[in-house]
Length: 278
Image (cartoon, rainbow, N blue to C red; front, side, top):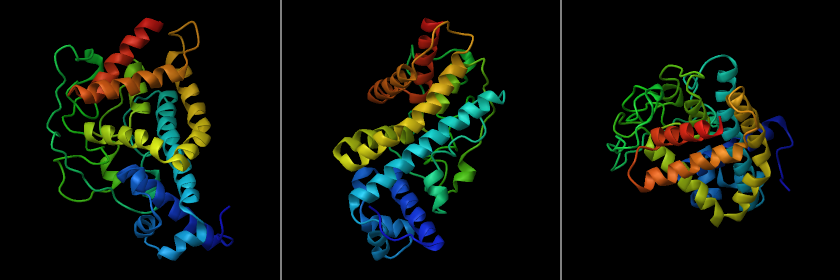
């Protein structure tokens, strides 16, 4: 049970601390979560974190819920663009940026030793409608400034506003791109790998994992609506969004472990799945 936060000011501070905890897990992984690290990230005294959150498990619980809210918002944006007749262009990454935006922070660029590895291997090239398979971001680009950490393109911190919203819409002539945009985090291969590494690391942090599991229903509701919209008129039977998500997760693992470009590989496998189901 939380303590503190009985006033409007207290509620705002509690929300800011929770957002900082989520942002810390998002950027540095679950192992980085501590009262001291969260206090530093939120810019509040250490005593404030223990005042509003009695122990680390309680802090982890609100961080996990905030993470799922960010993932759901990211997928919801893809669904909204689809309903508006657009594709996975403007607004990319805003859902994943929820925690950072809430605490008023910028996201620094993170350099990666293998950032230059952008071209897929032979046999991994997706259909032309998906854009340039060598791109880590929007179709036709060679480096995604929309990443949470675009290696090599910027030397200092850059605001999330400057990192999202690049590239044009793809539209429903490319349903695989719509699904990939909704289910993959924004950014280049390094950002996608880091995101999935953090997901796996949740298994070593029961409080965080439990919080994500409890909040998962909000994400599932969006994914059910998104999958129904994408497959509307394409498939005679309902498509389980868990299957689509499993294909994307599998694409990340196989591409990352075989030095393939992740985003185009995910689109390729989603195209194969769509073809099999329609």
